[in-house]
Length: 150
Image (cartoon, rainbow, N blue to C red; front, side, top):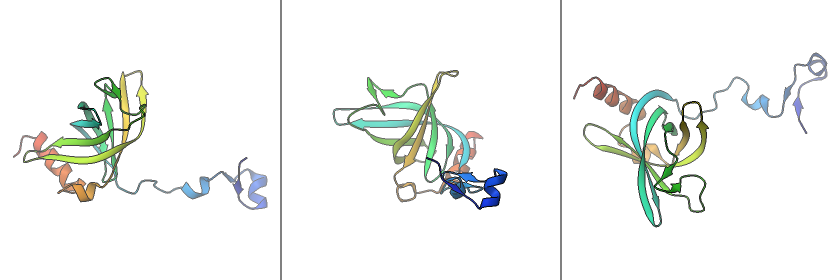
């Protein structure tokens, strides 16, 4: 069943918004501004009886989460999503002076079969509380790092 929100004239002209479109029409859905980046990082997964990590590339980042790409969705032989016991996840970003560690959970993932990659949508538990730098500051640090500046 679909819902429409519009008057009689709009219905006749086919200009009704269906479902919940009216809530989203023209609005940005994200709570935090995304930054397009291309950084290497590690996604650490801790299961009750095993822990390990996978190499990931951060494609975009915000204080609310990140979009990752990886060749793997398993740590060892344990799948990060399709599992009875969800692992504790930490995204680790190497900075010149320290290792930034942010607790996260997987919001979604999909297979990019044409590129043989997985896209992983991460939700940060509390980036602002765990991080000593803002996303803007982190972006500046990583840009300087890639340009070879200290």
